[in-house]
Length: 206
Image (cartoon, rainbow, N blue to C red; front, side, top):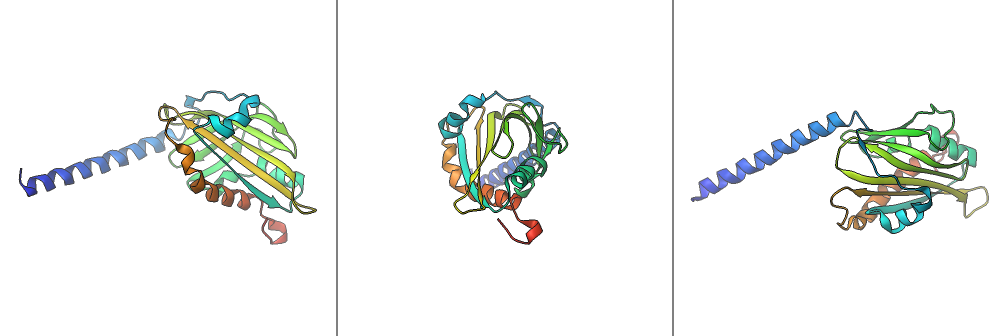
């Protein structure tokens, strides 16, 4: 086999992989229209601490301190599309329509290539909001997922600290060390949370 033949095989393989990749993205984009297409495994609220701590294949958390009041923070988390500050995502869109959220309510988060449905499993106004993934647009991709917001008094008078925990597990390759990626995810999540908690009316940032 001469060099020209080998080069032709390599070029052909690269083109084939590229075409398959594009087709895969097109399929994923079409599937993203149905965030409830594939059901996810439930994560009981009593197990969320261990889930975020060790059980989820991927898990991390970020904290942001803000001068917003508890009602203002709660409104931002339950009525604003906080995920829209992250790359390739929009939402969440709540079924409650901005009228406040309670246990059993759900929301959808839409992305360019994947979308998800999350159900509220814990709602303590001004203190804690926990959501568990109930569906995802790509079948056989995700086993379970959850997120939790906790609001506590901040380090200075008149401030609050918001802690955002996220976790998730792929369906078939959850054994891989996904948590090694946490340092790369933290700046993105922290930036998104800071964006949500901006003091827009005062022209300041949290």
